[in-house]
Length: 432
Image 1: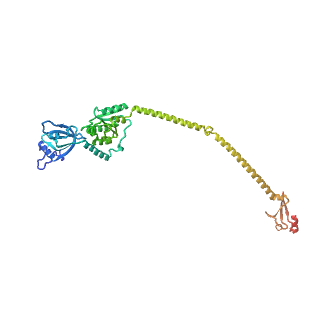
Image 2: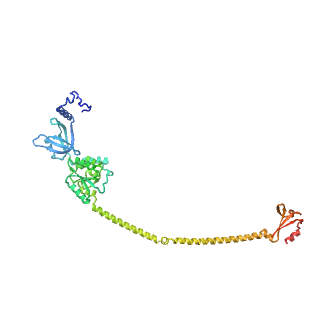
Image 3: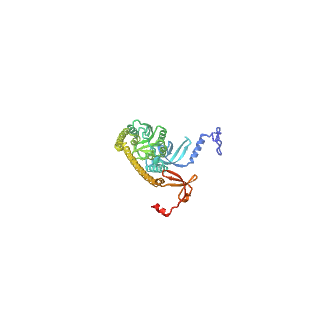
């Protein structure tokens, strides 16, 4: 079925239409493919040699070049003298850069790269590439410590990626199980060097990362040469570890080895044994720590109780707590003294005021009208109807006026018979 849904291929310019009734023969397709590939020209390709087939007496050598990060390969052909002229023999696992041109063999329908130049990738070039990749990943932030995920204190299930029946696997399992026998491992054995290492490790990492029971993943292998450890500096592996949901521990090689995986992993262990020690706590040491903490906690609690009891005893021995009513009695006595003093002061004030009042009353009595009347004086009032007027002068009581004379023990009604004005002689006698 073609793009237009008719099942008929569009007619080629200048050629017959292609359809079920007019199909292309195999030779035409093979020739067209060969012609198209011929136009690609020569290219440089890098990879790892996985197969070398150089038979004596043959005019062509066959090789297989594999991608270092993916499960893909390419067939190579070259002149046997090209391999013989190399400075060092080409062996399986060698990293090379080849220059050649793609060829499509119409007879067999196969594709291969006809190589005219082969360059071995030396250790210096590999290290330089690792440094360039390191700078790139650093700029992207894959090595940022803030991205590191914390490892669980006591993982119940640990994922382990390592070589089959390797010393690294034995070290991790033996050390971890001796420290915490209940720990469980999910092991994925992969190639740890060579062209198949990276694809297999990526597959195992993805599988363990999907497993919800796996709490931490360990990538472990023993030491080796720089070429042996190249898979653990692969860009695809570094990015996969950075993107993983589960914390990843790198336990590659020995202390001097430092592939890029160590920088991107959440924890870098010096050796596989060190990884087991740092992931799984020592049961005996943890129990001893718990016992020590319990003893220290009990001692601290007892010390705190003793201090508080001593403080309470000191508080109880103080006078205010030994005899709580003492202050009340003291205040009661003071209140009584103040009440007595207040009473004395009030009584003294009342007596003084009573005496003063008595003296004032006596003075008032002595100078009052009643006392004057008692000494023989009288108050004369003229009665004019209902009103009474005190007679102060003879003009106030003319003859015939009705008078009321008030004395000490009563009053006398009288009438004025007449008036007589006093002479100076009478005034002097009165004074005498």
